[in-house]
Amino acid sequence: MLNRRAAPKPLSRTAGEGGSPVRASWVGVVAPSPEPSPPIREREHRGRVCVGAVAGAHGVRGAVKIKSFTANPEDVAGYGPLEDESGERRLSLRLIGNGKGVLIGHLSGITDRNQAEALRGLRLYLPRSALPPTDEDEYYHADLIGLDAVLTDGTPVGAVRAIHDFGAGDTLEIARSEGPPVVVPFTRAVVPSVDLAAGRLVIDPPPGLLDGPERARGRDEKETA
Image (cartoon, rainbow, N blue to C red; front, side, top):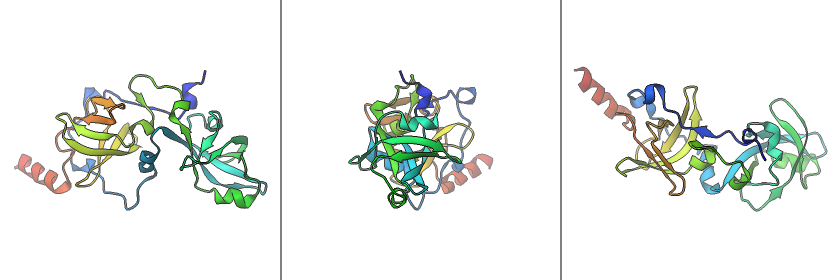
């Protein structure tokens, strides 16, 4: 049986400090990125998980450098053939060593440096079903990316576009159809319900979290008047 920690590390919802987060101000709103961040592309690969990426060529015999996204880096090669982003190409990975922050290995069909270098930046996927199951309240990033986000009364907010950890715990970045994206803590208080089968999660944000800078500034001025 596979060890869970060999897989990409799942997220766990936390109770949050004191059971609920502190009141948020407009700093919870982030500016939209000019280009989609890599996690957004996971929407196109629902049912698969990105476990690594080719970082470049190594040597002259077709070896490649692999940046592994699994908790135990070597296990990127331990779940069977990998797939490219299209899902049409399958590649077997045989590891032969490691370098500074990367693994060194051979991908099937790659026999020289030019072929290896042409794969630079290629993201490598596995079927979600190939990974160990998660415990209750644990989710792989790919489980959450692309989920619709709604308020407790069913009002649509947007869709999860990325997962972040800035040091204070996991957060979800939610892209909205109107206004800039918003970041919410991934706690039970703020995200009381995650329904993977329905493709959505419910958020119960503290006052002000969904406000933009101007609206939040006006509210704060009223409170201090």
